[in-house]
Amino acid sequence: MTVDSAQQYGRIRRLASRYCFGVETQTRRIKKSARAMRDREVLVEFNQIHCDLQNKNDWEALIVFLARLRKCLLLLGKCRPDLPLEKRFLKEFDRLLPHLVDLRDFEEHFDEYSTSSGRREEFKWGHLESYAYGDEKFASGVGSISVKSSKEAAQLAWKAVLSVEGEAKRAGWISWEDRIENNTPWEEVT
Picture 1 (cartoon, rainbow, N blue to C red):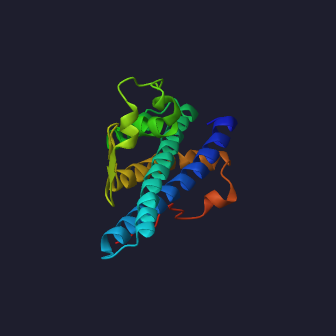
Picture 2: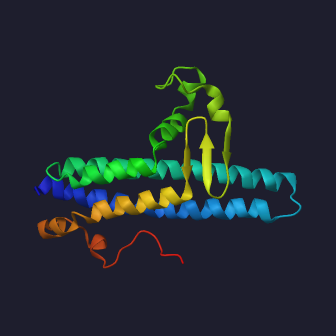
Picture 3: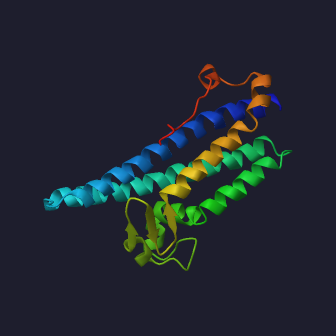
């Protein structure tokens, strides 16, 4: 590992850790807000709208965190192009979240899609306005994503980052915070 790639690894590790925490936080918020909407017998209209928007916003934030984790995997592959291991992780990540890139693109570039100038011609403006979501799954005309596959993909990304940690530690380019034993970006929930 060269000095530059070792420094890059430390940065990737710190960012991946943050994004894994983000995935864990958002999936908990999704479950909590959806449960709050479902469990209340009588809802004041404003509270119902608030919970509904919170849940939709949490799904959008989850998509952003997952897209950033995917970019960490791409950077990891550039950091260590000699190891085919990272390509295997990216392929599995994409298998778990096959619609992630399109969902992120559609949410991020809604302005272009609203004028029919988005990168994917088959996605229409109506896809942005028609969606379904709850505490387990988000779906639109662009694709779908689930809490379960999101968590699995985040754990897979973290595993990929850790797969080259030994070499990065030997190179001496991991910050003090990164050296904490058992630094896991999510709590194990039973």
